Image (cartoon, rainbow, N blue to C red):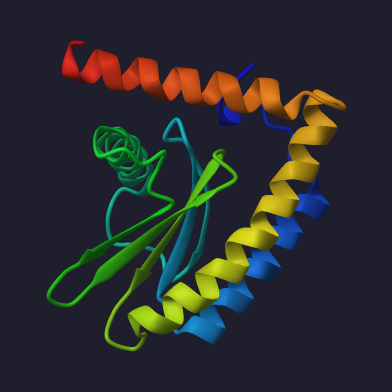
Length: 165
């Protein structure tokens, strides 16, 4: 069992996540927040709808995060828990949520990187709690570590396929 297809969101989970993302966007002044699982499946989008294919974006963002995990490993780090990409007008901040989900924040000049970083830190803690409860419910007691390990293995396999290792 791995990937978003095996997830069983309840309406209360979706509501909690929507409320949390909405509050985050108001407080941080970010334009948009996306949640993507580590396999590249789009979970949800909050805020201003992007003008691009969100599904393709989710897949590329997950690949970016996985590639950066490999870069971290090469320099002796276990992982990079956050990534920041700055553009001329728009920027994005990616944060790992419990090695299961990636929070992607799109923002422009209305928000500052400092505010995004501060707000993301507390957001990640709250999302991690929600997803831990969700996965505990789906997998039963003690199943979360099996699922996490499966996801990490799947991500590493995908990176090996991409780079022909």
